[in-house]
Image (cartoon, rainbow, N blue to C red; front, side, top):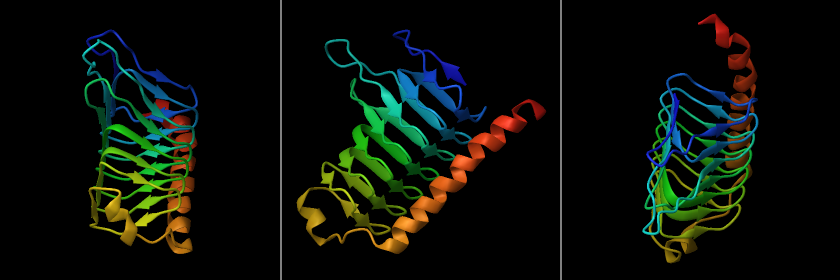
Length: 186
């Protein structure tokens, strides 16, 4: 469902993207080309800052937002999801937040008030808030990061973790074309 927010902002979805009919996109949302947005995802840009402004939620080209993901912004802040990035099932990305290109966020993970560098992997059930994750970092499953100091113990992305993320991105990229092809069959 594509709908306006109370300010009258309507999502802008590139014609090559696929948004599942059960997903909700509300407000100042920009979805770039060949993006896959899975069932029951909610992407909602509707809160204004004190001055009445609002930054958009931008989903970069060729990225995938999987089943049950929630992306929202606090008090007019924005969220940017880079190109070729995967946000896995039931994750939460709450702005202000920026996720780089070719990044991976694992199942049930939570991001808030942080930046995730290009090529970084945040594995399943992790929480990252209030910090800057440099490019190429791997945050293991069930890790809680609450400051830049916590990052000192995190190792750079392994080749195994990077290849898993790339395979998820490729599989979901293929789904865009497949679902668009059969869209009128249901």
